Image (cartoon, rainbow, N blue to C red; front, side, top):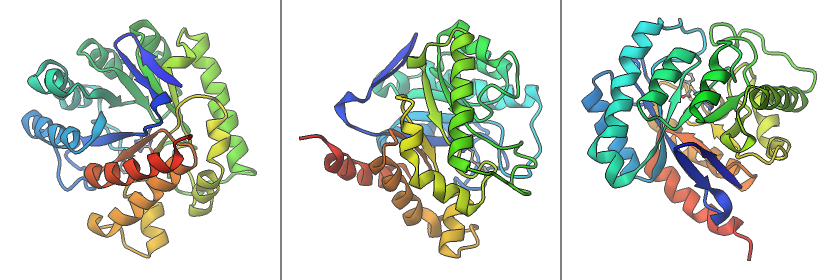
Amino acid sequence: MIWRGRNFSVDFSDGRSRVMGILNVTPDSFSDGGSFTNPKAAVARALAMVEAGAEIIDVGGESSRPGSASVSLDEELRRVIPVVEHLTRGALSIALRPLISVDTTKSEVARRALEAGAHIINDISAGCFDPAMLATVARAGAGLVLMHMQGTPQTMQLDPRYDDVANEVTGFLRERLAAAEAAGIAAEQIAVDPGIGFGKTVEHNLTLLRRLSAVCAFGRPVLIGVSRKSLIAKLLGADGKNPDALRQGSITAAVWAVAHGARIVRVHDVAETAQALRVIDEFRRKP
Ligand code: 7PM
């Protein structure tokens, strides 16, 4: 399986899973041990994650924390674009060449980030929030992550309901894959993500993690983000305020996801997760 766009290519046929390191550039980012609104600090953090084994850096300027307020276009551009420019134009990109994805639902942020050299747009709304998003990704020939969310970040955790969560999530992803392809995005540019924690109860999340094969059946790389999420905190009876208390649980969830077919995991603790995945990748490898 290959994931590629005009300026990147990831070949999963080597059997290795890939770590996507989370780079929050939000002043209110809480779960990465600090915030990186200063581009220099953000670049240093990105470099550390790449050295620790991240092959993709996911730059996010709009917190999608449940109940969080949305960020203005100007503010999100101010946070994200300088960091993308540093990451794609600086020495880091030449020496280590991480792929840069940008976690945004705004087509103007996507357009400017892709113009600055980003490779992938990670849209937690799967192109539903901004009607120009799919055309923007198509025009740039970029990679795209299509993620499922029920509702919006402001309201999604109030009362999530499904008749059959696995069916509804795969049905949504099937519809968004078709919409993306109709907009001129090739299937090989797309990765899919069931959106752990995005309008889901603990039981919904567990069902999706048990039925990952249903998401893998699209034949596209599956991305899972579960690192430090409230799912892990709830399973451990932790309050979620101390990220150290969620590290081992998050790694275990990442290992489960990869063992059940996920190809990319989006994480905070890159070194520890990369080590775990190196082992599980060998277990998975076909003889
Ligand atoms: C507060 C709550 C802050 C949740 C941040 C988050 C995903 C993502 C995020 C994911 C993809 C986080 C999330 N999660 N993109 N962006 N998949 N594709 O825990 O699961 O980082 S934001």
